[in-house]
Length: 283
Ligand SMILES: CC(=O)CC(=O)SCCNC(=O)CCNC(=O)[C@H](O)C(C)(C)COP(=O)(O)OP(=O)(O)OC[C@H]1O[C@@H](n2cnc3c(N)ncnc32)[C@H](O)[C@@H]1OP(=O)(O)O
Ligand SMILES: NC(=O)C1=CN([C@@H]2O[C@H](COP(=O)(O)OP(=O)(O)OC[C@H]3O[C@@H](n4cnc5c(N)ncnc54)[C@H](OP(=O)(O)O)[C@@H]3O)[C@@H](O)[C@H]2O)C=CC1
Image: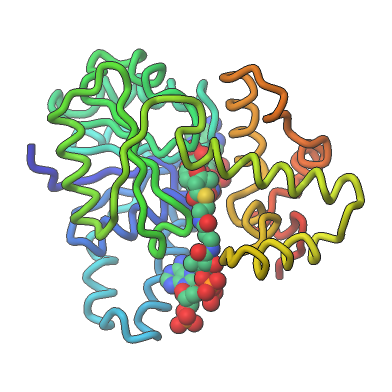
């Protein structure tokens, strides 16, 4: 099927990044959140990111304006009636996602594909709340979406080849490289990454080294672009905790148990970059 209009549900850091890339790639893009205020926040982030590309000569001012003109803000899910593909990027919580997929199934055209940007939750379970599980798929972008090349694609048990191929082709049109993964908790990306991030938090909790030392060791010692605590702050500590809980529940293995320090930070509202404070402070 040909995808022309895309709706992104959730205007947080991932949703706004996905909407930006879709609009930059020429798609008519609806950006949805539960309040117009949240959508406007997402649009502001998109404007800033596009302006950075213009500043660096990677985008012309005309291209920036054209991308912005392809974006339509909305706070009513009924707008899904106009899309060929809905990409959900709300909080990492099965209850919230299931509710949205039930609604999308009711509102989107019968041939529309419903994708989730979930970091770890089972696509098969999300698909099962809809009457079209063959058209439900995991489309896992990486943060920050405008800069990161990968889309991890996850098929649920019932996902059709046609849906997979449409999403694979679309990801390429968005300038991304894809890799396929089976529907297991945390997929590949977060099954591997979260163990490292959690271990770094345990090291801090046990007083083995300061946050700065841990990050310097991993950054310069392993040539990682960011240290693990800086990366956890970028992802969002609430999201890191939610993913570790999915891994622990899914595999029943204590190696995924979230560090108590992580739980405490999330309870304190120290969610990382997005709340202004996590392992580091942000202006
Ligand atoms: C949790 C999940 O489910 C899955 C995940 O996503 S896990 C997270 C995956 N992501 C990562 O691992 C990211 C690791 N970090 C990196 O790769 C890099 O640090 C990074 C690409 C994010 C930034 O690169 P950097 O060189 O460290 O930082 P920085 O110098 O600030 O930015 C690089 C360039 O991109 C630009 N840039 C940064 N953010 C931008 C944005 N949102 N939009 C446009 N341009 C941007 C900067 O202006 C900068 O340009 P110059 O080099 O010309 O100055
Ligand atoms: N952060 C990352 O690095 C990555 C995250 N992901 C996944 O993307 C998704 C979004 O993450 P991210 O963008 O980082 O998170 P953010 O916290 O930045 O955004 C979450 C979004 O969900 C909305 N939301 C929160 N609660 C509800 C609710 N009850 N009903 C409807 N919407 C709600 C928020 O709206 P409001 O602002 O109004 O509360 C916001 O738009 C998650 O599934 C996450 O696992 C995937 C790849 C990487």
